[in-house]
Image (cartoon, rainbow, N blue to C red; front, side):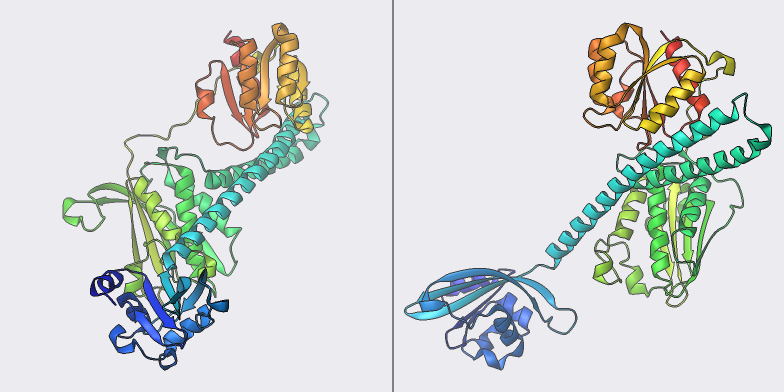
Length: 501
C-alpha cells in the first residue's frame, strides 16, 4: 500500500479492516489494531482464524460471505465488539463494502465506536419520556383541579346557606379541609412537573423540605424511613425556583432510595452556614448560604466513584434504569441558582449530598396581596359570561355568582364564548373563562373578544398553570385565578375588576 495513503488511514479514529476471499487479512489501520489488541504489521497476510477477536468480528459482520456473482455491495450494520483487556463489549457501527480489485474479491469494514451516540439516544428517549409524563401529569392535574374547584365551591355554598343545619357544619369543615389538602398536593406535583422557565423569588427552604418529605413518604418503599430534622434556627431565605429545588431534592431522594435496596433511613435537613475567605476551596465560596443535606444509610461509594458522580452519563446503575443524567442535571440546576453541591460517602456507611444556595437579600418571601373587600361588598347585578368546557364547573360557578345577585350566561368553549359575547357585548360586564378548552383556548378567545371590545374585563382560570402566561400580563383589565379557588376569592376578584371601570 502507498505509504502516504497508509499514513492517512492510520490517522483516522475509525477502525478499518480488509480481508480477501480466502479470509486472509489484507489491511488493518492503527485504530483497528487498538480495537483488536494486535500490531497491524504482524497480522497482515495472516488468516483471520488465527486471531479470535478479529475472527469474531468478521463472523458477526458476515464479511466472509462474498457478494453474489462478485458484484460490489455495501451495507451498514451494528454489532458488539469484545473490549480488549476485558470489560463490557464496545457497541460498534460497521460500514461493510464488497469490491473487486484485479479480479480479486475484497471486503472492507469501517468500524465506528457508537457508545456516545447510544448514550445520546438514551438521553433523548429519557427526556421525551419525562416530557410526556410531565404533560400527562399536567393534564391530570387540570382535570383534578376542576373537580376540586366544584367540590370546594359546593361545600362553601352549602355551609353559608341559611337553611343549612348547624349540626352538620363540622362534617363539612372536615370535607373542606380534605379537599384543600388534595389541592395542595396537586399544586406540589404541578410545581415539580412544570416545564416553563424558572421563576426565581425569595424562598423559605423549610417549606420545600416539608413538601418533599410529604411526597416521598407516600411514594417510595415503606422499608425506607423518610424523616426531616427541624432547623436549629430560622433559615435564611434564598432566591430560587421552588419547582426546580423540589426536583433537585427529589432526584437526590430517589438516588438515596436506590442505594438502600434492603431499606434504611433517608434524612433531609437544612441549616444556615457561613464561609470565610479562608474556607474557600473547590466550588465552595465565601458568604452566607443555606445548606440542604440529603443523608442515606445505604451502600455508599468508593472515592473513584465519588470523584465522577456528577459527570453526565456516568452511572453505577444498570443502563436499563436510565442514562446516568439525574445527578448531573441536579448539579446544573443548583449551579443555575449560583450554588454548588458537595458529596461525602464511604462504602457500607452511606452518603450525604449537600446543596448550597446563597442567602437572599430579601427580608421576606414575596406573596401576592389579595384585594381587601368586605363580604357585603361582593354582591352585584352585572351580567357575567362564564366559559368552561366542563359542565360541572360552569354549573357551580353560576351558582356561586347567582347567589350574590349576578346574572350569568354560559358558553361551552372558546368559539361559543366569542359568539355569545358578540351577540350581547353591551350587556356583558365581565368574562370568566377557562384557559384550556377545545376549538379556541382561553387566550385565543380573549384576543377575539378584545377585537370586539378592547376594554373587556376578564378573569382567566386554569387548573394546570402555576401562574399567568406572560401574554396575559400585558393585557389590561385581565386577572388570573388558579383552580381550585375559594368562592370568596373569586367574588373579590370579580368585584374588583367590575369596580375598576
